[in-house]
Amino acid sequence: MLIIGSHVSFTKAEGLLGSLNEALSYGANTFMFYTGAPQNTKRFEIDKNLTEKAYNLMKENHINVDNLIVHAPYIVNLANNKEEAKYDFSINFLKEEVRRCEELGIKYMVLHPGSHVGLGVDVALSNIIYALNIILKDSKTTILLETMAGKGTEVGVNFKELKTIIDKIENKDKIGVCLDTCHINDAGYDLNNIDSVLDEFDKIIGLNYLKCIHINDSKNEKGAHKDRHENIGYGTIGFNNLLKVIYHEKLDDIPKILETPYINDKAPYKEEIEMIKTKKFNDKLK
Image 1 (cartoon, rainbow, N blue to C red):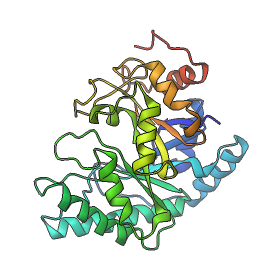
Image 2 (image 1 turned 45 degrees about the horizontal axis):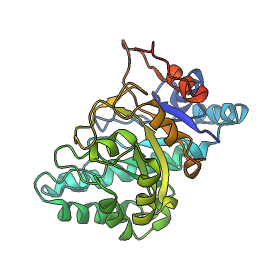
Image 3 (image 1 turned 180 degrees about the vertical axis):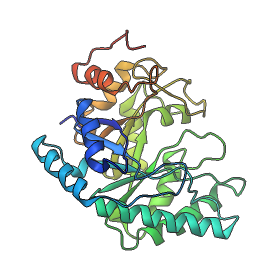
């Protein structure tokens, strides 16, 4: 089954119901959102009434809440503990984000592993493991480590780094991976051969840990380590290669989420989802 959607907004006024209505307007059957602004720690109280209305509307539209995704905010960095107060804040803030996911009934939260900022990869991985074991101790939400492009001092740039983290997580049922097509392209993986990439992922991590896929084209050549998303079919990965990812038999029933750039200040998700469903590239999108 094709489970396809995009990033959508989540506001105090409309809550989960507004997110769902936006997704439905794009022809989506899943979606991803932040529970508050990704650049700050301000959070509003979740309206239970709006959440209940969203659940009822999801049932009417045959949308499974287990396929919805929350994205953790960018401002936290579990990889760096140079300043103990900031590190502790990141841990506690993410614990609160997990609680908000549980309040909304969202099963998965995607997390950027973090940046070592001069500490080195090994120290960063140890910091992430320590923090996640605290956060996931009694969690009902599964945290999905996102594959990263490798810009700056990012960690989680290759499958082995993610495997190192996963191996030392105590609550194995609550850890997984989100694969981002732009990021792995920019990290050096060859999406001209998705079978080879998935075989490597399965050998190192295990496909059973793959729970979400971000579908993005890339403005950069393979291995550029830059992380600049492009609209579907307009980048270096290409429409046909992305279709092979989306419709791969090993990835069936995994939610696919678009995070492509706006075009003329307008979300392109309706048109891109239509392209994906019809398997026909729209060369007039931009």
